[in-house]
Length: 105
Image 1 (tube, rainbow, N blue to C red):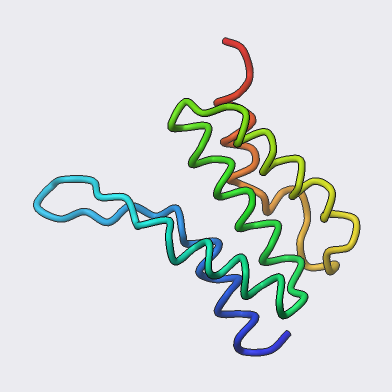
Image 2 (image 1 turned 90 degrees about the vertical axis):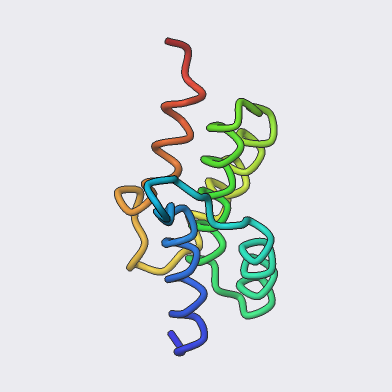
C-alpha cells in the first residue's frame, strides 16, 4: 500500500467525523469524499472504495434516504471478496451503522 493509498483510506475512514465549533456539530462536506472514491477506483484501492461506499451509505441512511444507502452498501459488499487481508467486516463501522439505521425498529 502506497502513501497515497493510505491517505485515501484514512480520509475515507475519517470522513464521517463531525467537527465541533462553538458547541455546534458541523458535518464534514461530502464533496471531497466523492473525489476520494474516484481516486481509490483509479488507483485500484478496493479497501478505500469499500470504506468510502460504507460512509456514503451511512450518510444516506442517517439522512432518511434508504434506497441510495442500500445501493452503496450493496456496492461495498460486492467488493469485499477482493479486498486485502487487512480489511474485514469488523472494520466496516459505517456499514454497521447504515444497516442499523435501515433495519425496521
